[in-house]
Length: 283
Ligand code: CAA
Ligand code: NAD
Image (tube, rainbow, N blue to C red; front, side, top):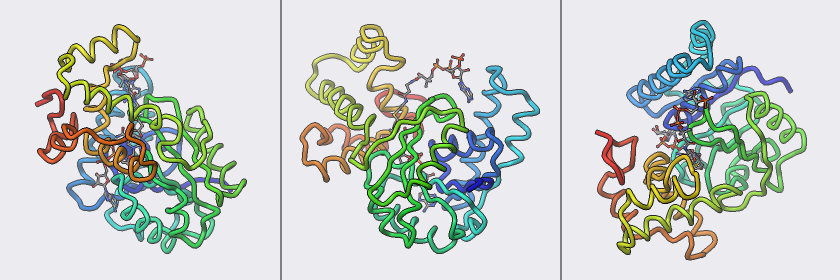
């Protein structure tokens, strides 16, 4: 199957990045947001990132303009009626994702592949919400999508070989390295990353060291590009809490139990970089 038109549901941190890399690879891309304000915000995030790509010499101004012209936005899921592949990147909530998959199943052409960018939730549950479970899989990108070279491809018991092969070729065509994982909470990366980030929050709670020193220790002592609390701000405290809760719910492993400090910060509106404050202040 030849993919020409890609749909992206959700144009937040991840959906905007996914739309951008697809447009840069030559696909015609339609993004869907909940309302005009969120759509506007998402589209301007894409524009800013494309401009940054030009400033960094990653693409020419004419490539940027061509990519930009391939992206359009909508608030109507029904507009995906000619999509060949749709990537869902809405909030990390299984009920909302299942509802989105059921709706996508009704509006997209019979040949379309439906993929989720979920970090931790059951792709099998999303597949089971459709009449085409063999055409559903996880295509898990990493943040920031234009920069991070990895995709985790999540195959369920029901994903067909043809779907997997098409999706793999699609991911590689975006310039990403593909690794394959079973449909288990957190797949490969988040199964390792989430306990590490939660431990850093527990370390702050316990008063072992300041957040600045924890970050400096990991950055300089382990040569990570960011310390764990800076990374948590970057990923989003809300998203990380949803991921941790989903993993704890399924696995009942205390390593995934969210520390009270994280939960309190999310309730207080400290979502990280995207809301202006998290462990650090970006305002
Ligand atoms: N388009 C294209 N290229 C871009 C770009 C854009 N919009 N923005 C930056 N780049 C390029 C830069 O040109 C640069 O490339 P070179 O190295 O070839 O020069 C590279 O990307 C790095 O950019 P910067 O110099 O601006 O930024 P930096 O060096 O400060 O690094 C960072 C920023 C890439 C975010 C780095 O801090 C990092 O890797 N942090 C960790 C990110 C991480 O771990 N992400 C995974 C999160 S977990 C996840 O995603 C899964 C989940 O489910 C939660
Ligand atoms: P985000 O909060 O930045 O964006 C989510 C967007 O989805 C919001 O703009 C919201 O308005 C929109 N949305 C909600 N319901 C919708 C619907 N029914 N239709 C269209 N849009 C809808 O979150 P994010 O960080 O972009 O995360 C999105 C998904 O990607 C989650 O499943 C998350 O686990 C996963 N993910 C996140 C990261 C990360 O680092 N933040 C990395 C990889 C994967």
